Length: 397
Image 1 (spheres, rainbow, N blue to C red):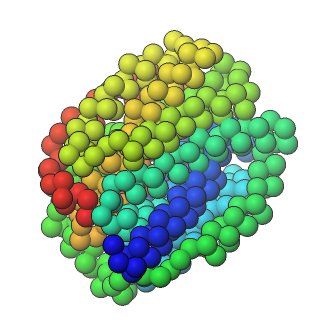
Image 2 (image 1 turned 135 degrees about the vertical axis):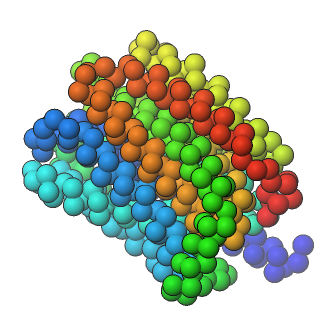
């Protein structure tokens, strides 16, 4: 291997570490909201139906907007979105407990959610480009950082809120900003990715969507159904356990078991899933999570934590593969592919979760939500079987 190749690999590996750590930080900030939805409803005196609207606003801001940021990412704007987004997210979400006005809460959720969303398409693409000959593995490592962040966020925010109230979340703003600055200084921008300019980039991306509309539809549908479980289980746990009078830290701990399982699944995906097994992984492994998800409402104590962790693990193995597979199916615009598999799918799935949780909240029957999540996983696996195959050589590009 030549010196230039070695230097390029070393820089790519270093940047992959930087973006994985930044993903951990961003999703820790986003994950702090997970155990707090019932508390926010009480803090802001939000009436019936508020559960649906809070979750829907949050989902629209953090997920649907990623398609727009993916289009912008193919232009020169992506260079600063990946850093500015986390800054905005950390500030806004750290301030959610400093007011009692529902209007202020909505504004903070929208702005903070947009900041979280702005990071993901560009971050995933730059992480994948760090190891262009092992894209699936680099995406798995990047995704692992995010899911471990989502595991850390609920437990940390639960501890803070139990001790200091919701306003105590503001204490994390300065820490988050300092860490973002340090990671920005550590980033090595030695080989900028070529980008189109302005509307040319957006027109090119829209053309990709039109040309591959069947693939896009399958990606969104299968991803949405998978996300109904991946995003829905933690939210359902927050309401189900709150109804059983668990403390915020206890709720956060059970949620963290699920998200830590997803993060560990991302690590196992990076270590063990090879290109020729990716399509099999997409549909078979998540199916194994169904018995664990379906039995969660009948469990308690250590068995509850074990079942949530196991279901997260089995779902988590396939999630980064799905992101990478989408980039391989749409190589002409990988940022758009990332926004579809990480953003639009999560947004649509999150909207379904919001409606389902609101229905369960009205009837105080959260057990039935886990049956819905199980059905969604089965349907998602079926749709993944319809996705086109990619050759092993192509998948490693």
